[in-house]
Structures are given as structure tokens and as C-alpha cells.
Length: 309
Image 1 (cartoon, rainbow, N blue to C red):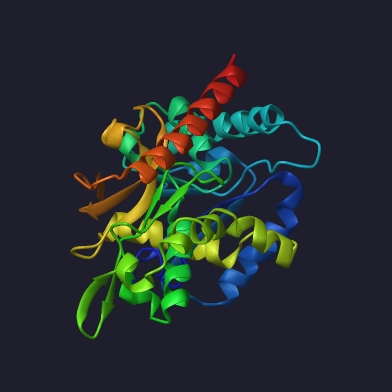
Image 2 (spheres, rainbow, N blue to C red):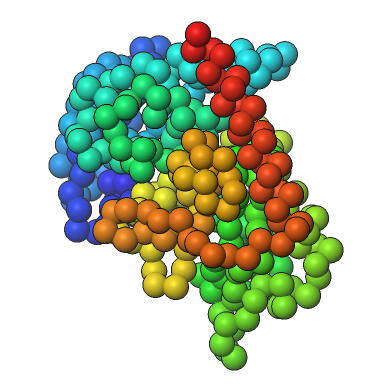
């Protein structure tokens, strides 16, 4: 997708830097061969390496997909401890060797907290340049509404994912609209089923990753890659007028979310910068959901920082 221009546009040449662990070096070289063989016009070079310094040197965009998954019988602290050490070393390599304007997207779970660790160990990268992926959840919410209403997914806009990329996230349709022949109508009005929107819709989006693992026996691949491209493309090239997207970003205290967490907000992007959409009304039901996912992130942050000592 990146080599085809899906991420950075059809006129932007790219050099891909791919990092993997030493046991995967041979498979990585196979991926490089395939990229060369596909003869992508925009692909101007491929660096395939197991060395973090080489991988991070001069990069303008870093997509962090590497992480340690939770395995059966593992405590959260064990997973966090392993991810802290991974993100500490990769953050140091980005800090010393990436381009000064490098934009970072953390995909590997726990994505919000991994992004926070990365920020801690790459202090010269501006906090606005470190984000995590909740666009996958955002796109899942769009998909559910589009299926429910039998409309094109491109006609649904302004859903919001608040909080953590976990099962406490809050998929919010209170400000979402659908374009129909008569104009734009609110999702709530068109769905006309608050019981579904306040329960099954939310849990379907929250649990979608687990449902895919159950069906495929593997975690999301295509949808995660596609949403990572969407995240970077909108960040770099801008969001369409009148619409917003969900990004995990460094909280400044907006919507009474504790400052200092990486939390998913509705954002608009322009000139390579994101801004949190301000002034949206938050009802009592939503307030509880926003606070619940913030509490989980505060706990994760404390757990991660305890692994630093």
C-alpha cells in the first residue's frame, strides 16, 4: 500500500526502511525481493535490516508495528515489561537517528501506552509527532453503521473513538452523520434504535479485534494496514473540510481527559498538524464512558512506569 502511494499520495516517491528481529531476517529479505519484483514506480529504495539504528536513520515517518503480544497465562505486567524494553530501545534509535520532523504512529498493543513509553525515551521528538492507531476502531465503527443502514461507507462521517485502543474504548455516534439524497442526517435519527447504538454497536466495535482472531486464528492484517495508511495520509495531507477522524494523541486536558495520557480524540488535520475538535457536547452516558477508558489508561501508565524502575 505504501509503495503504491496509498499512504502518502500518488506523486510522493518513497524509500521503505523495514526492521525485523534477527530470526526473521531471511523472511524479511524475501519481502524485499517481492517489493523489487513488483516494480512500483514510486518505490525509490528498500532498506531491509535487523539493526534499529540503520532502520531509523533519516526516516520521516515511523510506523511501529513491532511489539510483544500477550500469551496465555501471562500477567499484564509481564507484557508491559517486555513492551517497555522494546519501545525504550526503538525510541532511542528514533531519537538519535530519525529526521527532525519524524511523525510516529504506534500500532503494536498496548498501543496508547507503548506510544507514551516511546515519547518518554525520545524527548526531542515533539509530543505532537507521537500518535497511536485508533483509526482501525474508527473505520470499524463506520463499517458497522454503513452495514446497518445499507449505505456507502464513504457517506458516513464523524464517528468518534474516545480513549484506549482496548475493550474500554468508546465508539460514539452522537455527532456522526450520513449523506442521503435529502441531505445530511444524524446517525441516531436514521438508525432510530438507541438500544442498539448504546449497547450492541459499542460492544461489536470494542470486541471486533477478538472476533477476527477467533475467525481467522490471526489478528487483523489488511484492515490494520489500511487504517495505518489512512491515519498517516490524513495527518500529512489533511482531513476533508467538515469531517474529522480519530487519532490517539497526547492529551492536553481537553474534554476533562487527564493531561499526559495518549488518548483517542476526534481530530482535524491541516498542514501536517492535528488539532483536537473542540466544543462537542458530551452527554451523561458518554461522560461515564470517557472517564472509564481514561481510568484504564491511567492504570496502564502507572504499570508501564513501574516497569521503568
